[in-house]
Image 1 (cartoon, rainbow, N blue to C red):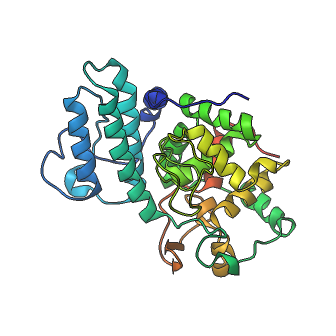
Image 2: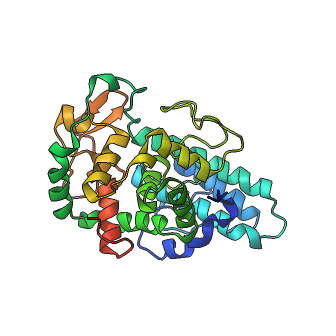
Amino acid sequence: MTRVTLDRRQLGAGFAAAMALPLAARLDLSSAFAQEGRGTWSALSNLSEEAQRLGLSVPRMSLAPASASEDFSEIQPAIVDFMDSVTSSAPDARGVTSADVDSLIDRASELLRTSRNAERAQRDIPEGPSAAAIAAPKFEVIADDYRKLFATCEVKSEKRSEVMWYVSKITDPTRRKAYEAVAEETCVPWYFTAIIHGMECSFDMTSHLHNGDSLKARTWQVPKGRPNPWLPPSDWVSSACDALRYDKLDEKPDWGLANMLYRWEAYNGWRSRLLYKINTPYLWSFSNHYTKGKFVADNVWDANAVSKQCGAAAMLKALVETGAVSPPA
């Protein structure tokens, strides 16, 4: 099978469609944040100004500086849309070198990675903390629970515009081409990989699917040292295939609804379900089946913390409702 290498300059193909959707309120990056400031928004503002000086396009948004927060649900789409806009406009910008674009994308990616790592719990797999003490539940025992939860799953009305942003990235033509290339090599449904990409990488094509680490080196978070072997520079598709093979997902024959939900939950870990008796936010955040409770650091559980990431099942529900994918059996 042919291996596809993703060119960063292709990433902006779906940007215009994404920006047409209602998004979470965010900054006017081009002017409102020209003043001095700290934090993620200030760093993104600086990148925006640099991009504009190079003649590249950046999103214009509407949140006043005084209202800005470090809320991941606002930061994530702002950074990803910035990256998409830069890559989309680069071919038409005179005098801009690939090194200029790569530098902007790399710094934005690191900003995104830092914010994401602060929001999500690390994967609970055999190399992870306390993972050996948690035995996975048998699929047959919880399969019907998955089916019932998905049948009654509803995206919360106040989260619908955010969920539609996730859908726009999953269905972006350039990203989908990469997801389908992975499907060709692994036989894993393209949208299953796309949803992991949203959860682990915020749809950043410069990050390993395994855990969101930079493609510039092997992974250093759990799972560490992937891909193995690694032939730098690793392209996104080959690394994504390694991530799925690492979890032996390429060996699975049945991709029905319950199987997918089980595998997504297994990909992140079972502690929310087994230790704290809640529907894991990794699946159900932004839906009626999740209210609060999450790990805020390795082995640190906060019963009142609320996930700011859209769950995998909520993404799948929106994909089905919009007709982007057929309802899984």
